[in-house]
Length: 100
Image (cartoon, rainbow, N blue to C red; front, side, top):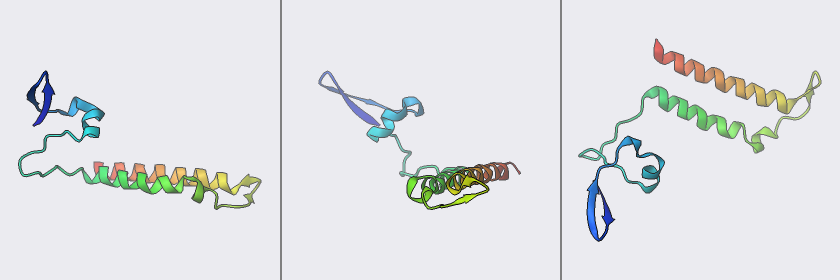
């Protein structure tokens, strides 16, 4: 339960999933008795881990490492599209793995 002050009296209310970002930012969530929170599915956890892996691979310090050219195409461009395609393929494989 969350208490709000309204015109000098305290009003208790329960926040629901449709309360959105503001409830998240304020940390106002009603947790079930015992404080346990349902864990996400393994597929969702794997996709989140893949996103966390992809972010550093596509940022400047790592993106600036490839040097030179291959058949007239800069190595940075090849690296960028190679990592991008790899992340897409891995995400598709993770998503399809759950359906079997």
